[in-house]
Image 1 (spheres, rainbow, N blue to C red):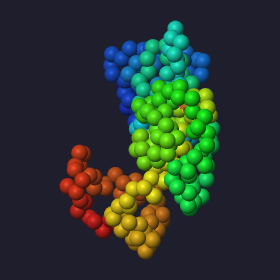
Image 2: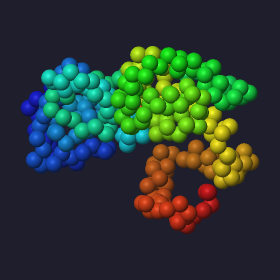
Image 3: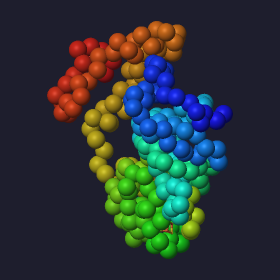
Image 4: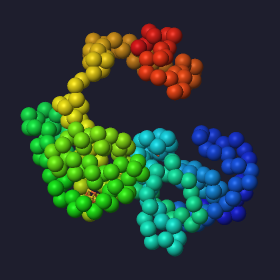
Length: 264
Ligand code: SF4
Ligand code: SF4
Ligand code: FES
C-alpha cells in the first residue's frame, strides 16, 4: 500500500477530498506503523484516504461534531502523546497515528434515571459513583479536542451542581478520548450526558416552542410526510435534498423563514 513515490495528481476527487495545491510539499507520516508520503495540506482523515485507506463504517461527519474520529498521535522524537479529531487536525511531519478503536464505555440506565425520584445530584452519584474516584490529575482536560475543562465538569457533579456540570460539558462531542486516558476509569462523557439530560428534564424550564412541536409530533402531524419520504427512491431523495431552500449563512433567529412553510 506504500505510496512513497506518489506524485500529487491534479484531478477532481470525489466526496469532500481536497485537491492538493499545486506546490504542496510531501511529508512523511506513519499509519499503523507504515510510512506514507502525503501532501502537507491534508487533514488526518484525508491523508489516510490519500494513502489508500477507505472508511466504510463509522466514518463520521467529517465536520468536527460527531466525535467518531478521535485520534492519538505522537511525533518522532517527541515523548508527548497528542490528541485530535482526524477530520480537523492537519498532518505534520513524522506524525505517528493511532486511531482509537471503538469500545463501548459504561453507560448507566439513563431511562431509569429520568424516572427516578431521587434529587438530581443523587441521581448522578448513584449512577456514576466512580466520579468520586477522580484524582484531579487533569489528564482529561488536557486530552479533550474540544477544549472542555473536563475535570471541572466532573468536579461540578461531585459537588452536586448538576446544572453547572451540564453547562460545562455542553460542547462534548462524545469522542471518548478523555475516557481512554482517565486513570480512575471514569466515563466522563456519559456522566456529562446524564447531567445534561437531568438538567433538561428537571432543572431548566421547558421551552414553549419545543412543547408545541412535541405535541404536533404526538398528534401525527408529520406521519404523512415521513411515509412519503420513506417511499421515495434514492434519486428522488437526492433531488429534493439538493433543491431544498437553504437558510442564508449567518441569519439571526427569527430573521428567515422558507417560502414553503407547509413542512414546518
Ligand atoms: S482524567 Fe480522570 S482522574 Fe484525572 S482529572 Fe480527569 S476525571 Fe479525574
Ligand atoms: S469531554 Fe471527553 S468525550 Fe467529550 S469531547 Fe472532550 S474528550 Fe471527547
Ligand atoms: S468525523 Fe465527526 S468529528 Fe471528525
